[in-house]
Length: 381
Image 1 (cartoon, rainbow, N blue to C red):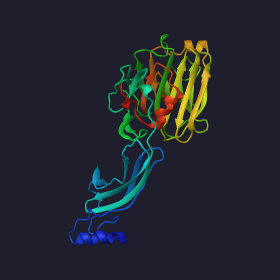
Image 2: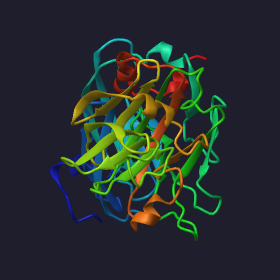
Image 3: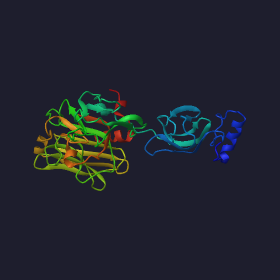
Image 4: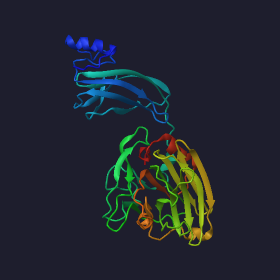
């Protein structure tokens, strides 16, 4: 018998002794006859998501599956030993307050609480985002397929171990898969790392494409360094002066992103965009060849929305193609050996919803991606 008794355990203990079912009652406690006790059941609601985060403590024998009920209906069966669960709130077109009864059950043991939580309809994802969309990766399964057929994405060499599929918890509601974790420790025998995206049409060099946008969700640990890491590059990124395009991760004021282009003897670069370690940010670059400028956009949950731009010289525009292979390295430069040359293996990055457009997205369109937290796949083709 469980020796950690409390007042809240009296009623369920008596009902259990009498052989009466108590599912119809909403008790916080558990019967003392149970081998397992569920206690300290609490809830919270994230400020940026319409969901309820539940957590609890298990004591005693914990080899049984855990059932989570909402308003008397089973919503999840979890592995033994689990102590938390996130429940998306029912979608609605109007703001309202939900009163929900949750119960966490393990065998005969259970704990129940009432959660009064506010719901705000998320901002709408701009319908125009489907216009000009040439490449799109959801990262739901491997091998990866471009939903628009505009590119291929593979490890930098076949011998580099594949990245890890992770939860897309930047979306609302979160999905079990939808993120790609690329780890610096995933390396082949020649020191190659990262992924390589090969465009079927090189947007950087095509004269018929005068504007382009690349956008994606990004998360990195607190391992930013002064020598820089390559988030994405179509060039050798040992120097930002080298010909081509790169997004670099450095350590000014914490972790900062630099939007870089080089022409061989110098660079046109936009700096001053900070991101919070271990938090998802949305990053987008717009290159306008006709206007001769590059615009950076970073949306971070703690640093806020950050925008900037830099003029691109004629010689920089001529060099946008980098090595000319029509490829981009992810968590690497286009050579796949940036970290080998710098002697690093500890740079990990998470990517989500990677997309490319053959037009300049507006700030409003990009803001709708970040604020709605909806996948581009939710838009009708």
